[in-house]
Every structure is written in structure tokens, then in C-alpha cells.
Figure (cartoon, rainbow over the protein chains, first blue to last red):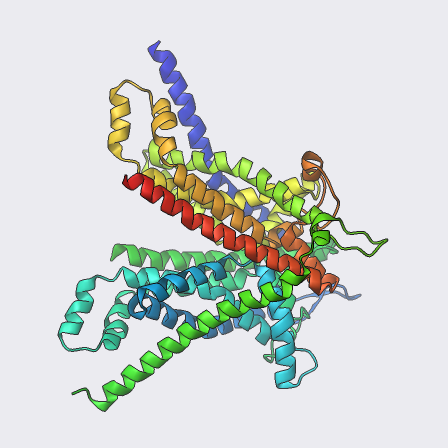
Length: 290
Length: 281
């Protein structure tokens, strides 16, 4: 009787262990698949030619597979989105966490939640219909689809996660810190920006890194507004391709070396994301150890 | 009292904060208002209840709606046991801190991977063996949503008081029986919240589905649908807007997606409130 129950419990334990390890298995599987399918093209093209080649002409009679334009576009695009999105998101978060009346805060938090739930294709659609014609009219250029439009769309898309995470970090600052600062005669605004914000800095840094991850990984919205021509990102109005959209735009009709090169691009993107994840973990650990 | 320099700082900071908050609010209002105003007039019964036909030039999104429903059902049916099981293992069984750390790290890594990479890997793993079909898409979504379900279940498992477990053990119940009859019923709220969040994510997903589930608009039953290619609402939006230039249909779908995401946000809030009240009693 006893051994029978023990066996039964051991089997159940084993089943749950397997279920627990599925997550780990998935991560390993994804990494292995990406590496295996990404390496051959890099080998054939040559690592340096692939990473630092400045022309992508995959369908030319003499194909060239240089992804420097995509890498630079992804970096510029993300940096631009951060430059636009972070100040707005950060200041909104300080306002909501510290200044806003409770009703305003509740309404705004709901609104930000909704903004976070909007599918990326809807952002892309609004960008296509409002932003792209807007940029074309405003700057008097033939086509508004390009780097600038992508940057603005990405900035709006990372706003909710930056606001949410910064609010959480700011609200975790002990009330005593602020009370002490106020008691010393600092104004409320000085207290928020000179005491609360520095105290919440690793949480806010994590929010920014999360924003970077979102921006660099976004594909569909960018695909709809960035123009999709594999140019070097020389100007804000240039029609460009990101790492993500480079994969998405040729996948459906690619074959042979071209297809393998797309997998290599995905591998490069994956490595970027892993770096960003590591940075995120670093900042979150700082937050927890405080 | 306050020096001019401090006053300057005060007013700049105050101005900047209000400006940023107003900008965020205005952006949210604008996007929602714009999509709803442009989209709702185009949402007609005919659009919702027919399938597209090249012969008559008719555009209907019924197949896309059904595909979305199928893929949500299929993905949830698979991811629920996996996610809940993983959470149970982490909180109830795992005795080694290392394993817990590894699993949690893996879950974090999964939630950071962009959906286009899921799409690509899903294509390699599933579409190459099952073909481009809704099932391949659903399996890809299973991997994507595993961390969501796992984490929300785990959060609510942690709130089940240790005394409940000890009480049940004291009455002579085995571990599995305690989990099944005492612990799991208590964490229903976490499972439900996880489901709602996942449904939201699945509804909004497009990049991961483009290459795994394809973009056909055929009208199918459930099982037949799962084994054939099909576009969900988001993918259909993309195809109509970007490839076919049918902006009215695209806006109609966008408005529907927007309303669905209102409902999802609202129900997530309501579930949390309901269980908070129930647990407080």
C-alpha cells in the first residue's frame, strides 16, 4: 500500500518536473534552431562581409548580403524612439505617481493599459494613414514613409511599458525619504526629482531597457511605415529596413542562400535581444537588492 | 523665500510634467478616437457575416473571425496545462533553488524574444512538419504565452496560505490530492487572469502568425480550420492595409480589435476585483 502511493506520488512529481522544464526546453530549442539555421549563410558569405557589408541586394544577379544598413537602422530607430519616448513616458510617470489627483491617476492608468493592449498592426495602420501623409506634407518630400515615421510609431508603442514600469519603481520609494526631504524645506517638485527619482533609478533604467527591447523587436508596425527599401539610414526621411522587417519582408518568397541569410539576420537580432535581456536582468537585480 | 533659480527649476519641471501627461493622454484619445471613428461606420453585418470572393469583389471577414477563435481555443487548450503545471512544479514541488532559478530565467528569456523570431522558429519547427496551418500558429503561440500563464498562476499560488496545505496534509491527504483539491481551486484567479492576458496577446499577434498560420481566407469548421492555412484578424488587417490597399476593411478590423482589447482590459480588472472581494470575505 505504502509503496504504491509513493510510486504514484513519484510519477506525479515527475510529470510536474517535465512540465516545469518545458520552458527551459523551449528556450534551448529556439536558440539551437536559430544557431543551426543561421550559421551556414554567415559561413558562406563571411562574417565580416555579412555584418559590415553596406549593400543588401538579395535578388540581384550577383547577390550581395551585407546587413550593416539593417543593423544601423535598428540602432538609429531604437535610439530615436528612446530619445522621443523616454522623456515623455518618464515625466508622465512622475506626474501620475506623485502629483496627479487619484481620479486622474486612475483614468490615465486605464488609458495607458489600453494603449499597451492595442495590436501593433493597428499602430502601423494609424501610422500609415496619419503619420506618413503628415510627414510628406510637412517636409514636402515625395514619400513620408521612412525612418522618422518608424521612430515616432516606436516611441508611441514603448510609451505604455515605460510609464507602467517607472510608476511601479517610483511608488516603491519609501515615503520617509520624501518626508525627510520635504521637512528640510525642499519643494515637492525638488523632492520628486532630486530624491524620489534617484532612489528609483534602477527601476527606471529597467523601464528604458525594456523599451529598447520592445522597439528593436517590433516588426509589423515598422514594416507598415518605414518604407522597406534596404538603404543606409543616411537621413531621417530615408526609406529603410530594420532587422525585423528585413526578415519579414523577404521570407515569403525567399529560397536558397537568400533564405539562409534571413535566418542569419534573425540570429543577429536574437543576439541583440539576449544582450538587452542581460542588461534588463542586471537593472532588475539592482532594484531587488535595494 | 525661494530663490529665483529654484523657482525656475520648479516651473520648468512642473511645466514639463504637465506637458508630458497631456501629450500621453491626448495621444491615447487620438489613436482610439481616430480608429473607432474611421472603423465603426465600416463594420457592417455583411462584412462580419460573409467570406471574401474575388468573383463578386465582396470582402467579408467571417473566416478571419473564426480563425481567430479557433487559434485562441487551440493555443489556450495546450498552453493552460503546460503553464499551470510549470507553476505548480515551481511553487509546490521544486526543492532545488537552482532549478527554480533556471526555469524562471528561461521564462523571462521567452517573454523577451520578439514575435518575429517566434514566427521564424515556429515556421522551422512546426510549419515544416505540419505545413502552414492554424495548428502551427497555435503551437507557436503556445510557446509565446507559456511565461504569461506560468507567471500569473505562480503569483496566485504564492498567496495560498501554507496553513491550508498543512491542514490537508494533517488529515492524511497525499501531495497530489492536496494540490488537486486544496491548492489549485484557490488559484483560479491567477489562472483566469493569465488566460485573459494570453487571449489579449493572441488577438494582437501578427508577426508570429504570418509565416506559421498563413493568410488564406477560407471558411472552415474547427478541425478542418486547424489543419488548413488561415489569417487571424490582425494578419487580415495587415494584408488588407499593406498588400491590397483596402483601408476601409482594415479600419473596420482595427476598430473591432480595439473594442476587443477594451473588453479584455475590462475583464482583467473585473476578475481581479471579484477575487479580491471574495478573498477578503
